[in-house]
Length: 514
Image 1 (spheres, rainbow, N blue to C red):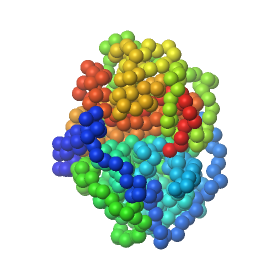
Image 2: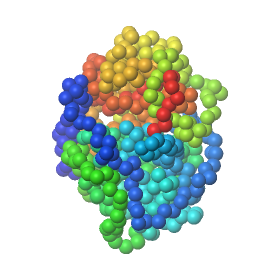
Image 3: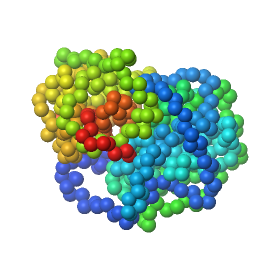
Image 4: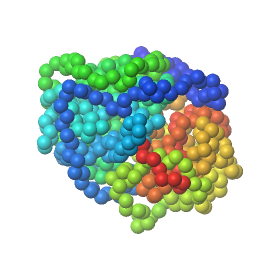
């Protein structure tokens, strides 16, 4: 394991320094400089746009089926049309709203502050109607810009020490995080958001891949410098965060076309000036894998976190039967998905909650989760209004597929306080808190584990979003008072750390797409 990655004190320092507490939030003098707000897109002004097909097919596979499936089909080669659909329903602009001062863009996946700091790149072999190359996805214009000609996939195969899913993938999606675009609002806590916001995009991408019967796998382990060099990003501002293999072919990619040289491509500045938050860059650098040997140390360091036996009687999940499930397609659900801004204080059914939990936690195909179904994050719930469940705090025991009542009571006020004193988790039917044993994760994965646990939280959170909207409910991702969350769910949660929060329930107003 790399020296930096093994120095887990760096990870602990970052995590502890970016915790929210009532006192830290109140003492923070930060304000939003609207005149300096970053652009929502990365733009290469001197590269020609390759338009993506805008006539998108109706695939029609029910959303609740896609979020629970993992495709394993061989000989699965996406074409240009399929690539267009994957990109649009993962990170595309699904709606625009014009106002006197400009225009707001709403995207397919949720993002903290609607700032969209995650960029997508595509490395592919020859596809129908698209030459082999490395491309940047221009979401605002719904097209691709070619950064490198020729098949560059071999670079990614070597960067992942021959990871089989990458070696057999005709298409590889590379996800990067742009620091300033999110730090403009959230400062150094942005590095946590890289995982959340990349994860919600991946939840959509994995669901669409399942609908299209394309195998897909999330790759968190790779030699960072090699991937960043291929993209030619300025690592002071933008860094590769994850890879996703899409499809499967028998032949491995050829050697790359020559030396990977710097491109020196011009991009439009995000804003007049950028404010640097060194802590998040230091965290990323400390979690970087520096060589194939470092990657080999990461490889195989899977951590299968299993739910413990119940300390009290479980309330079994009662998901809807297949015949009772709505047949809304994954495309329909993504297009109407939004972040609920107000919840009605109305109950949902235990069957709805059970279905959401069941379908969202059946497993993520990822290099750090083995076997399929292993999970780094545990889910704790504050149940405010669910027919058939007593109000109270619960632990979701995944192994036994039930909810363990930790303490009974009306905890709406507590849920609101824990969610940074916002009304959303207090008004919601259920507030789902993600907690993880960071000590075990750091011990097993080094600092790289911090990327993995945040990314997994974002993926599962994105699946919660999709499942809720498939059931015509609402959802909203939130931040939280870190240590207060752990205290509330203790002694059961003792030793864990808060990672993410998603509120679920019935929307009071029409949700805003983000």
